[in-house]
Amino acid sequence: MAVSSHLDVQLIAATTFTPPQSVDWQPEEGATDAESLVEFAGRACYETFDRPNPHTAANEAYLHHILDVGHDALLEHATATLYIRGLSRSAGNELLRHRHFSFSQLSQRFVHNTDNEVVVPSIIAQDEELKRMFLAAVDDSRFVYEELLTALDEHMAAEPNALLRKKKARQAARAILPNATETRFVVTGNYRTWRGFIAARASEHADVEIRTLAVACLEILREQAPALFDDFLVSTLADGTRMATSPYVA
Image (cartoon, rainbow, N blue to C red; front, side, top):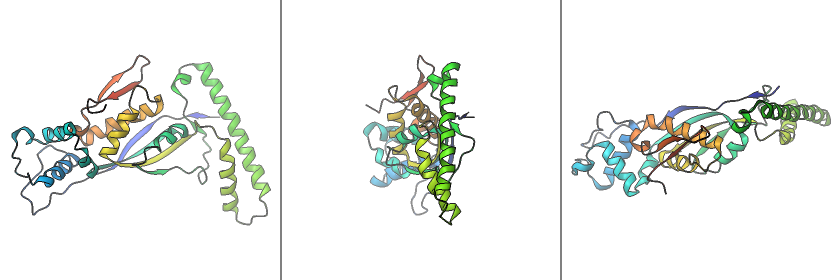
């Protein structure tokens, strides 16, 4: 029977920063590695390591100034890697459109998911009858999938390599699986790319599932670099879902 999967996003890697010994500059106490790296990159452009402007001497003020003037190419020096589970393949296809990320995705060809986990759209999950219909349809498609696997394995009986038979069977049979089938990603991106993804996908007008993902990513990245993400305001919509907007995003 189909099992409902839930979104899980975890930070598994992030930028660390070691100031060069040959430069008379040290990160501000309390600034994270990502924040310090972005500041250093900006100051390296103009050799302003002595922090000559009192208005941008503090790390937070400096980073806000960078965002304000649109010098966000500096954010490309800092990166974060997130492990995402409980995302539908439908939303996963939308995530893959953000081409500046680096992706590693769960393979349906090699991995045989016997748990049959799916992501139930929120508007369906809120109604028990709709959810029952949805999960029943998933079970039906999974039954056909398993039948196809068996038939394809028999069809390719002449192939002596058992592993190759299974791979070929799965890559053909997976065409019947629904878009709601759970997928998983390891996603790496620089902070400019993460900001662009959040700006586009945490919008009120984005699909609910990927908007939920974007807000979850925002909350994690805020811990890594508060000054680079604290311009996003998270608010709750009438349907109970959340969105995020920034004054730096048109």
